[in-house]
Structure formats: structure tokens, C-alpha cells
Image (tube, rainbow, N blue to C red; front, side, top):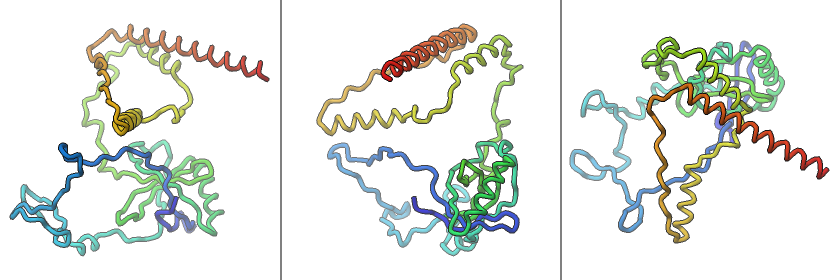
Length: 280
């Protein structure tokens, strides 16, 4: 993938020439157009003035901020340029903090940092030092005309830069009505069974197991309709039970089901292993 930013990482007096490359790719999602129901053709949108109802050309459109109902302050390109962050090609890491001390809600979009010519040794040095100390480098830089807070962390042989949210973008959980353990009157027996259930279901994270089933089913419907086949609407399943239930009974049922599934998985694995040995 092409780089989206070229500059340098700085810590102390060390500058590392790097470039920023995407660390994620957009999955192919279905995109829809709005159609005229009668003709099945796209509809058009017009930029119409709320004063005289006439279409407004792009050249006459500017940006404005609503300061009160129906009252706007107009801003020009010069206004935006006057406060635009300096397009410095430097991301200076001014702080190094413990990785576990950062609330995961701060992290937004990840990118790979790739060393440019001449920066390989300093890049490896910073990566290994961050891994050794379990620290994350924090700093700000300008990207696409905006100032961003960013974290630099090691991931195997790579350095990953994650764009971060600023503090005022996070919701304080104390604003929410959340139960304490004492308020909820959680009994030790219930906690013990819940912990056991989680341990029984525990396994390594395998992202390939999960698919966007909604998109898959929509593609099936589109394919069928494109081929002229009639599509039957699927039956709507029962809504999940939202009533207060006997938590202990549900935990016991869940434990039994999890144990049964685990035994089945072991038997399946054993049969596969036996077949492999016989084949060998």
C-alpha cells in the first residue's frame, strides 16, 4: 500500500526517517444507491437555497457554524488556513508511558511505520527499546490538515502508530448508572460458576472464525434477485428473553453445555489424529 505521510520520528536528539502506511484495509462492503421506486433508477439531489428555493452552484457554497437557531457565522478558506496545524514532517515523542496505563478507548486507527533509507538501525533501536521497557511513545503531528495525538508501539518487527482520541472525546463512566458488586448482591457461588464457565470457553483468539454474516446474506439476496429468483423472507426468530431469571440455574445449564461441547471437540480432534496416524 502507498504511504500516506513521510517524515521523521524524534525521541531525544534521534531522528528516524519513516513513512506511514495503512495497517488495516476496508473490507468490501455492499454500497447502495437510492432509487425511484417506480422506475428503479437513481434519484438526484440538488443544493437548494432555503431563502428563494433556487439551486446554488458549488462556487457559491461556503461553510458556516450555527451559533444559535437559524443564526450562522460564515467561515472562509482563509479562516481555516489561519488555524491549520503546521505541516511539520516531525512526530516528536515527548512522553513515554506504560503500555497498560492507556485506556483502550483512546486508540482509534492503526498504521505501520516503515523506515526510509538510512533509518533502519535507529528504527530497530527504538522498536527494541520500547519492547524491552514495555513503553509507548506519545506525541502529536499533523496529518491531512489536522492535528492528531498518536501513540507509537512495537509489534513484532514493526512499529505501529495509532491515532488517538483526545481526552475530551471520551465519556466519563461515572456519568453512567453502573452496579457495584455489593449493589448487585453477587454471591460467591455465582461468581465461581461464572469464572469456571469463562475458563471452559477460553481459547486462543482466531479472527478467521468471525464473518460479517449480515453482508454475506445480503449478497445472497442480491445474487438471487439478479438471477430473477424469488426470495423468501426468512422467519424471524424469537426475541431473547429479557426477563429476570434464576442466574444460578442459567450458569449451571451453560456450564453443562460448555463441558459437552468441549468433550465433543476433543473426540473430533482425537478421531482426526487417529486418521492421520493410520494414513501415515
